[in-house]
Length: 144
Image 1 (cartoon, rainbow, N blue to C red):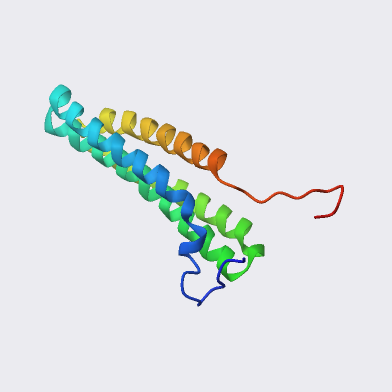
Image 2: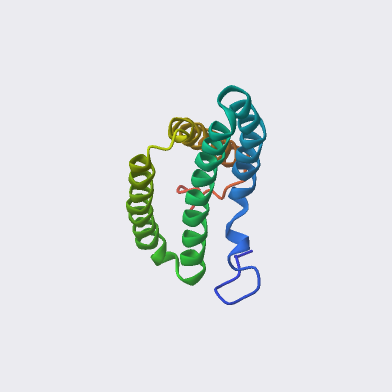
């Protein structure tokens, strides 16, 4: 069964099942991390942790949706759209982080730790999803 093409109902959604587990994992990280940061570092620390996890989630969602859209339109667009999305995100995130650094906001260290933790949690959850998913394979010997 092939995924629906662009314009058909479910065209994008059918290409995003890999997002559920990482989103749940990051939500769990926020549920645990924000209160711990509030206890240890106060409201500013909690805000920093929430902002860091939020940036990670938004970043991965932008990538996931843009690549899913490109695949729905034409699989040949996946690589160029993915690369342009990545480059655009890095420039934007760099500008955001530079702006935050200029403010001297005391939640910045907490935000940085949360970004690192969020990326690690996302990668582990995504890898776990990939290991458990029945991904298609090709038998090169028989041609099937």
